[in-house]
Image (cartoon, rainbow, N blue to C red):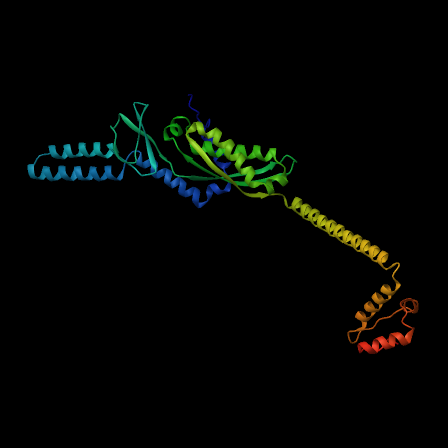
Length: 331
């Protein structure tokens, strides 16, 4: 296989690529990541146990020289200490060290204590195989319906083959970050705004499949991608809010019209039921009138034609009905 190398043509270009990183690159998590990488870089050359062995060898050589009154033990102690300093290495439980011998891959070392031959062997890189989190941002990306959006996503990935991650790509962290950013922009261009807002989980699974297929050759697997936020311009947000409000008003009017239609249909059915039953109609009218005036302080104005139709006997009938309910008749 041909190794893939992500390098810049000059230092200025590298600075420009670094400037393209999202704002999260300056956050505390990014600083902690850089501090860990610096510590790993230092441990490639010198480990704590190697440093302790160097000090012990020098001290032992000095004590031996004091007893023998000779400089040979001091020289021997320094040489052995230097050899131990650059030979003894330590890898933690979640790390693997890639060892090269004369520039060729020799073996993966770790976890735990291991030794290399100084000058002959070189610890090319110490790879952290724990789950990692990378923040990806796509700014002013156009959706399929040409809406500019800003999308924030989180990529969860891990190195499952330390050998491939070192030999196949120069900087696997940058490779994952740039690949995730490109895939996110491509996914935004294939989806409409409504789909991105309502189907974030589906969009994340699609991105995870694309990234996992691309990074698998580097010994890296992308476990999941989560869409954290989808931001749209304020003007478009206001327009969408007005559109949603108009849609709700339209639905309310449709529901009200449907209710009035149903009520009218019921009145028609009631009229059909009372058409050939005048006595039932009179009883219903009297009941409605009684229900209206039975509460104290209520006033009902009934046209004289309605009174004659209900057969209440004019004003005297209404007076009797009102007296029976305890309410004075309306003047």
